[in-house]
Length: 339
Image (tube, rainbow, N blue to C red; front, top):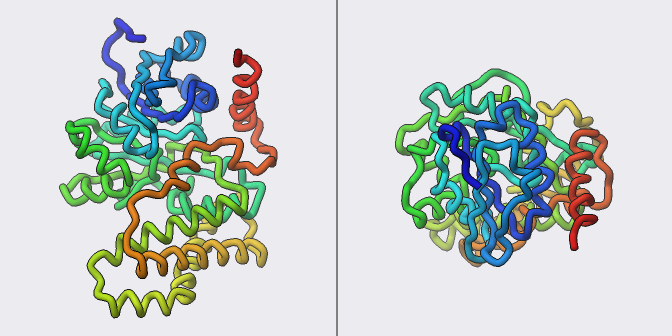
């Protein structure tokens, strides 16, 4: 669906592995933006399931595009197809389980009125009811609290920040390489002298993993990725030293996670939470040690699969925030309307 109106101000790219079902919550949140009429929504989906978004879901936006690609194995690489088609000067990435507040898009556009190459939001915990969720939120987004003032940073929230289109590659292969692990994109921008801004006036609410299975898988995979990246040029003796020191490696990891909890107003520190964080840190250290022995690993199927989950993250627990709960409930509405 295209529009005869002037070009959009903001293109928002979201990826799905199935039909429109799991996008209903995030599309509803985007439809509620104060400047929704200026948003070009770009949905990236596998060829075999790519279809037209219902008119009732799309009418609030400037325009909507559905991009069919091959099998979606990595969210970032799939998103690159949508980014290349963006018509707006600003392109924002988002996940199906991270919901912006109604003024997010407007504030994102305001943030890009400066010379920033990229702007990132504060990311708060949408389901802080469990210790697991609190710990994983600290690990993934604890560095981006809803406090302070806009400032220059060297990293922004992964999967949920916005970029000037003119600083991004025009070749699909190059863009996929950078978005396959978005940290690569942010490092490349910094290396080229571009400045990035963290602006806590922009807010997104992220549904975090709240099951032991997800905590174990994500912590270990994160360690595998980190260890493989940092040790690519290490000699054998140095790898061996770090393998033997693996239990000690968990100390700075746990300390870092614990310090990030201080900025979260919905967290009560205690012995039980410390235990959860310690478990996550040990699993991360184990993943590092395995990478020092076996070398780097590029593909992490567990992580790629987990990125598309919504209700499974909750482990059967309810969300207390009524707005987020209403958005997630749209998944049930979708099931009831399926043929």
